Image (tube, rainbow, N blue to C red; front, side, top):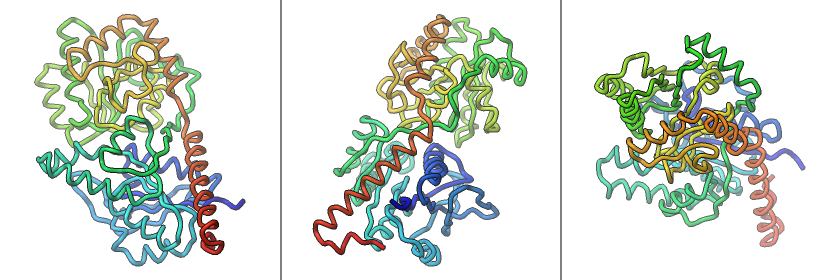
Length: 399
């Protein structure tokens, strides 16, 4: 059988980085070893692609609030013409906006299946943007109609399926996990030693870490308020938030208001990728209370280094975590979150064991994820060909 020809796309892309972009990039990076992968994405001025897979860029517009280029694929005739120079077996998108419409157009023209991954809960984003629950729900339902035009939608858990259904999607769903490109850590103590040396940590200092965008949607304020409770109760710690976001200034002001020193709470901003293993390994506990994230790739990254995390009960980000076994779960409440952190760090032997179990239970590599992704795409292509062949022997021939 010839290589599967896949067209993968989304509305924003590298050099911007977030969890969804990370997912598509890794699908393409690892997928191009076994399949013929073409990515379609928005154009960035002065940025040159240097990836092992083909990327075709479309016209785009800059959104200052999000600091990203947003693709205008459906308005770019040259882009469409270039994309259509190749025949594909299937198209897949990771966002339900302009690129989704473009992908559906390609699929219809080439008579091939179109699939999508439901990544993001846009409901709270819409509510924050339009300041109206009614209008936000109208927008959510519009997205649901878009998803209903696809042959199948991929989600990472039953909780995210429920969310997708609440948008109005009624079609077929498959579960596919998300992973990390970090290998399983086999030298944690050495990485901890390097982290102490690089960042000036004392070996017995309690280090808590958060990795992700600095936005209120991620509940950074809940983390800080929880840590204030612990500080007032005499717990000594150092907390590091790795990442940037639109609420950096607000969280910096909250830090000051709560009376934290720079030694106690540090907003590191972006750090080099090669420093992540040091921070994940040195972190005694990973904190991630987000209710917004449908997965949280950072959960798997932390697990790769046998570092357990605290998540919110019932959250999609906390899916797969069993309290006290491979991580910790707290109520969506600063007092309970503080209590869970305190309980976790008070028993270092149990905390270490929870980290080891997180590595055992939560870790999955992007290579494994991509293999599952391609296997599902191939199955969808074959099922469609069989169906078309049964209906009309000539309709299944896309070449």
